[in-house]
Length: 184
Image (cartoon, rainbow, N blue to C red; front, side, top):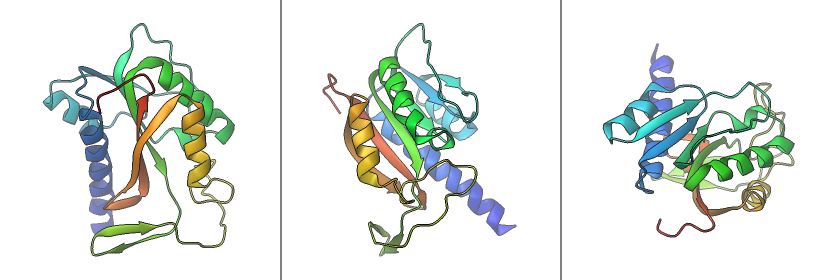
């Protein structure tokens, strides 16, 4: 029973990180890509931010045919469920539809440990097989953080910073700004 509550807490912690980071852009509207997450939706509504949700088809790249641009796009639980070659294409779609920036969350299976509540990552471990639900994960063979950063840059974003969610280090948050946006 306790593990069920831990999973809920992990999701709440991750959703909080997404809302917190997106709020730094002072958005009027947000597009949330991924499964509808009540904690995320409620967080934006409580901040008086208009929120639109979009759940793309599973395992395939998506095209955002938006009639309007969104101040910020939040994308979690989606991008690692498709082949890596589609990751950059989807980031370009996100970049086209975002006015200011994006917050994305990707799985990071790389090693880490907590030292006095500070996450230390980048330790070296042997390669392992990625879970079947993910095509790739940061830290798995061939998918290092440097490769992900390069793909983000190639999609037209500036990486402001990245970190692992402290109580759920499997989730890595990336805060991205459009190159022409100044103000974060």
